[in-house]
Each structure stands twice: as C-alpha cells, then as structure tokens.
Length: 266
Image (cartoon, rainbow, N blue to C red; front, side, top):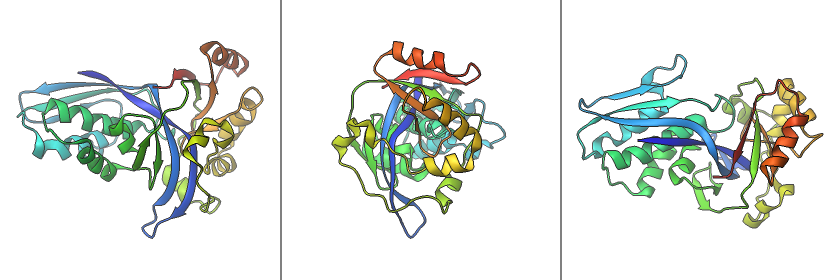
C-alpha cells in the first residue's frame, strides 16, 4: 500500500496557558495539505518491523513510526510483519509535523493491514502518547484543536493554495515553548473566525523572529509581497492564495535561492 503522509500547517496558534506538567494549553487550526512524505507499507512473512528512510542517525527503536507499529502488535489479527519505506520530503524541525504525520499514518494504515479493528478513538488515545501533533494525522481531516493539540473538532475552510517557504534552519519545538518571551495567556478565538486571515496569528512567531535571524530575513522580504505566516514553532513560513496563478506570481517575486513548494488544501 502506498499513501501520502501529509504535512500540516497551523493557520493560527494561540497559547492559552500552561499545565502543571509543563505542557502548554493551545488553540490551533490544523490545515492538512496535499503534499508531504510518501509512505509504502508491505506485509512480511516473518513477524518483524522494518523501516527504511532518511532518518539520520536516529535508532530505529526511537523512531515514531516504529513506536506506532509496536503499539498495534498486540491487536493484529494478521500474523505478519511489516516493511515501511518512507520518502522524506518534509524537512526536520520545520513545524510541518513530519514525524507526527508518519506516526499517525502508520497507526491508520496498520490498523487496516493488520486487521486490528481498533476504533478511531482507540487510535487517537495511542496517538496522543506519541506526541501532541500525532492525533490530527489519525483524524486525517483539517480541524480546530484544543488541549495540547489532541482535542479535535473537524472544521473545514475554503480551499486555498499555499506556498511553503523553507528557511535553512531547524527549530526545536521544546526550546521555543521554554522561551521566556512566549506569551502564555492569550484568549481563544471563535471557530468561525478562522475564515478571517486577520486571526491567523501565531504566538511562537515573535519568539522565532527574535531568535533566528535567517527566518526574520526571509519573513521581512516575504511580507512585502503577501501576508506571511509561520507554521507551528517554525521554521516553515507560508503565504496563502486563491489560485495557483497568484501563488506563482508571488514565487516569481521572491529570491531565486529560496526553497519553496506550492501545495493545496487537502
């Protein structure tokens, strides 16, 4: 089975508070895209888990894909192993949910291939143990999210084209959320307000622009040509357009050495 492991962007990210365990209480809108990593799943006769892909020096046992597959072993009714090949396109530390998407996609696909017969709620319970962004990729729909990102409500907005801009910077989510500069007492918006781009604010953006000069340099150029936003804790910036032609006009104005991609709402 071949499938897309989609990227997400956060059209809005507000930090409403912080729990005693250190996790932040968020309100965010996850927009899933028609672009991301490619994943291929192949059942094996021997009952092993094999993962192939460009994951750097990360040990296989620490890979979220491996952890997701391991969670379902006790529930599989098909006594076969699995080989999972990943074609990585989503940059690491880019705020697009690459590893989380791979894990959530693995939970969904293996539930089917191994005939685990787990409900979506059961899969979502597994997903949140792997990370706050994993549940939306099990949900597999654009959604408004609360809690630490795991409380999901399906909500779709107008289909748009998005130009993703990849600054040559990898940003640690943990470090951004630890920053003393982060505003932690924001107020939530009404769900319907996500249609209005004036509400597409990201609490992490001021922190990142202050700490990462390369991201600020690119952001300052981009906002000359189109309203520009940041996904998650960065480093990916994005601009939004009603047509592919408008998206291309924006790209044509930007520096030639920027790494960019055009994608569409899922």
